[in-house]
Length: 399
Image (tube, rainbow, N blue to C red; front, side, top):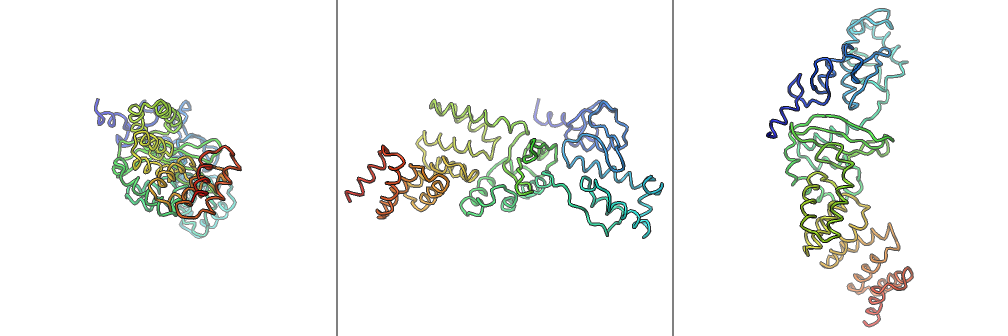
């Protein structure tokens, strides 16, 4: 069966456009969440369906949704219905007709000013519909789909510079080296270039509500998941996955497979897995690190350097990748870059003797013997048997 046939078969059996992601008991077919909302707003779905809508009180409902955005869409549809029908809370008056008079608007404003559940519904939509311009929406609960939409809009525009504003590691991308590397890395991804439009499928939260996976269908065929993390009350993009959300939990197993093959020096098999998994986990610092190790084994240092740079760009706290990047810069006599990286490592771990020793080696090359000696003595305080430090001290004494 062709890819196009698969795409056609997974379409909603009602609208024929969106991807079907749930079975509808009313029509006995797979439908999309958009069509589900369109149907269930009449509250006639069977109770056996977990997506059936049950009214709890005015503008409050009990149901299930695969994302907060889906739920908001449902509430907007319910608001459209609610404002056009008589309501007990307004003595049987119709809210939409009340909005046509100053007295009616005032009565509704007094009610909504005391309504406790407003932060859970799309109040801007409600107030605009009823012309309640004197009411200011209360603080709305932030949800990750909104941040993901803005990020996806910039991908569709291929404006990678603008996507940086949504990234979790904001401090990292203030540095020109990492900013430019991020842009090059994403601009050359052949799949991301195909994302000319997108549609939300679902969103899921971690138990502590500090991480979310937002699942999209991009360009009508590609599964695409954005991993977001909450920091200082705001949702930030942590990484992208070319696949469904369930692949997020499979990354550790994929990394283990690659690590085992590299440890056994089975570089050919490791290469095939690296290619496969890198096309899915496109923002994996660990995979970039293993690419670097693969090229080290293959004696291709320049390619290794690029992948270690990718790893550090993606994870500024990945010290092992940072050390390898520093060392490759060192042997290429890019001393300025190497020194900066070694110093970053030592800021985190002042007793990292390999970085202390290598930084001392560079100082010797630069004629800074006093500074080098101080670092080497620090190495030997940490490990009196560290031979490389002893050799470099001997080198200073012989100068």
